[in-house]
Length: 232
View: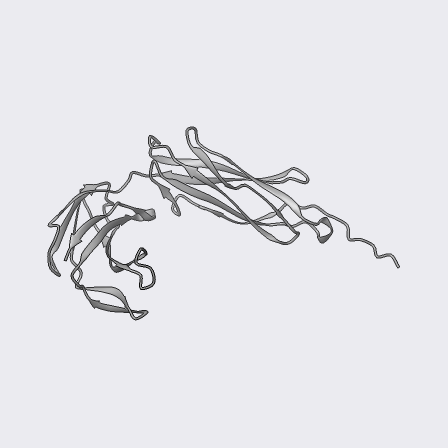
């Protein structure tokens, strides 16, 4: 008895997700890098066997595609993930841009084209803090530029070496959220009275211990400043 082989019926893949998906999910500072991820499902029939797919990205002028996983071979009904890493030039203008992403089914040349919005935003800059040391409750004035008028989070973090690897550090501390900066240049916070800390593999809330803390500011869209230090 000769069994009839299943027929191959080619179909467009279905897009499961594209990241970033909106200008609110990713903001990029000039000079930084980010990745574009595309996840999809092969919708060919079982008789087709594996199919090859490719990812092509069209960037704004002056931006660089640093490569990534731009092609993949998967079986029908399987899920594939492709990505490209993108570098934004230091002199990129602030504002909204569009990146065109094309997923191609190489066996038949069918394409799915998607547009991804990207927002280029100014960096968060800390130029100084005053004072640079103090006890619990001390008011700290952070001076810099491009702070959000209402939505700044201050991360007050104590780096602690790992038990297993002294070269690996974990950050414990406190997040002070929703700090306003009406002038966009100054923030005022107080040294927190308590922080989250790990002791014997358990997280607990303890009184802020002495040490050298790293302070970062995080703005809307997860733009994060470089660190400054404060000694308690």
